[in-house]
Length: 269
Image 1 (spheres, rainbow, N blue to C red):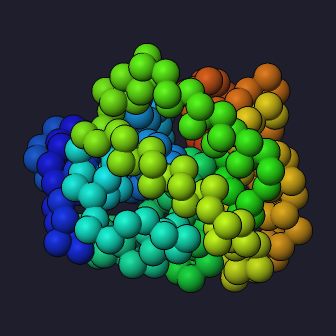
Image 2 (tube, one colour; image 1 turned 180 degrees about the vertical axis):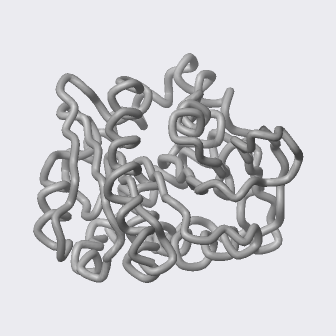
């Protein structure tokens, strides 16, 4: 496990390699690489132990990074706008993958990260071995906005802010930029459903039945647009973070997907 940083768009981002190489050398092994894309207020640390557990279970390597302005990564000079998810998927993620020479990764995205993964896949499915979308957003719905308004109220609570501040250098700026974009009039029309028809990589969707930031309509929209059968797992009594609330079940579902659908897809290449 090695943590370091690199510069993207002239601003530093922190990343973490979790290497499952059996020789324990400093060299990155040739095992399958799983790239983790965190949620809207996430960071490397907020994935907790989940990446390490998945690496051990699947004999893979993992690459985890904090986007600009998240964790200890430097924020960009330009304020976040309504195109920030597309910019992350089309402008920044490809630069990171190219820098490390990561070929045919598995993308695991949560919430905003799942949306970024879907946007990337809509343009670059040929570069992926598979995609796991946890609690994805593909259009704006009132449930999501209501959850963000509630989070904004909670953010005024010192304990809530202190808890989040443990994971980020500038929590106030991060929270403000994230919530302001989502609650803006311009972002209300954000919708990536149509572009999903271009995805051809194996896709697994995982969502909590009681997700406070998105309804199952998000899943239905994806299923109705993707031109092949999408695998999905709806976890009962679960909220927005299945990988943290029900890690064992989530790990089991992902391993089955990687062993079956993704292995088959790689064999065809």
